[in-house]
Image (cartoon, rainbow, N blue to C red; front, side, top):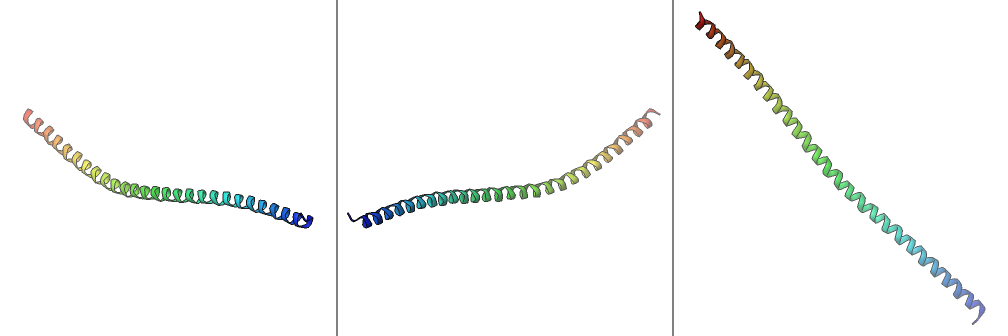
Amino acid sequence: MNPLLAKQLNDITHMVRELRDLFRDRHAQLTEHERQRQEAIQEGWQLKSEVAILKRQGEDYERLQSELKALRSRLSKTKEGLSRILNFAKALGNEYRQ
């Protein structure tokens, strides 16, 4: 074979191998970037879900705080009423003893 032609074929073969290696590297990089992108999407969905849960819990907390305030008010009124009943019962007992 013509030495010049052989050298050119050898150079072409070498360039094809370099291109193959370059394509493999780029394919590996693209695969990794796609994996990272999918992971980021999953993380975004998870964070969105967590935000929704926290928002719902915040709304529940506000509702529970309001209910707690109402229950404390009812408890206070109930204690006042029971205290008056106890005072009436004591007064009635004192009246009965006299």
